[in-house]
Image 1 (cartoon, rainbow, N blue to C red):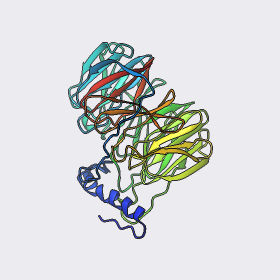
Image 2 (cartoon, helix red, strand yellow):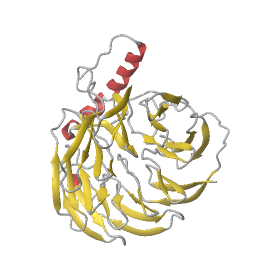
Image 3 (cartoon, rainbow, N blue to C red):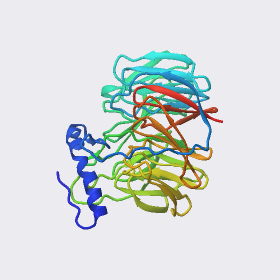
Length: 392
């Protein structure tokens, strides 16, 4: 597969990024997906410049769960407890305030997703579509096969464990028994991103993005699609150029849901019916976060943008982290927080995008979004260390 973009330097630069994904797509073709970043992407990350730290943040604790391998293992939080998993099959629960281990469990196969939990049931997925569930003491209560690769953390709540596979199936499993209650099946696209795509409960629905630039809401009771709306449409000639999947987890705030796509747009819609509110050309590999005034996302070049969540007008952007492969962001306090490929955690001002603080972890990549457990903000590195940070 080849790609060709005539014209401007901007188009040529975008074409170079798309071509960098060809190797990743070829390697994953038998799985029906493609990775967001490839070793063939040789753009040089900028060196970090000294900053004047104006936000005091201290490390409150550190713990280890085990390495993530090639996967983005997103930690989960329920009731002040942090849940995390490792590629090697370990699932652990930590006190969010102190980092103390509450329980530890092991699976008999390697894991491919982070956990989901409602505090009573914790679920995680492994190789060949194996899904495991544990009770609030870490005892395994069931194991089921869903016959498909699972990269996204299960969504747990409302008596369900919701699992999505990379071949576009979504299954609602009984949280106590693992028995299938319903299945939602979509038609497959020729090529999709082999990446975790988050889900979230909002109101009485399950919000999630799909390949092909679609966003939708499923009914938890029966898996029926309540509405589907288009965030962006595919462009280009080759399948690589037309990759256009929703990335990360949709950001919900009140009656609004916002999402980003790869090689597409950033957009906000009405949560009740999917009616579009606004959209702008944009390409993000990680997804957005939002607060009451703004939507925040980093683009494929690791430029961080803030958009007015009511009309999409750009409020600011920060290009001082260029090509540092930023992880998914979190809006927290007066900051937007995200990790990078060297394990640095960056705190940017929500008001103007300037650096407020920077912290170093173990030097390995941080791709998952930070999570909040009580007063602690927690990040998980690819080497499997969890850090609890507390702004003073």
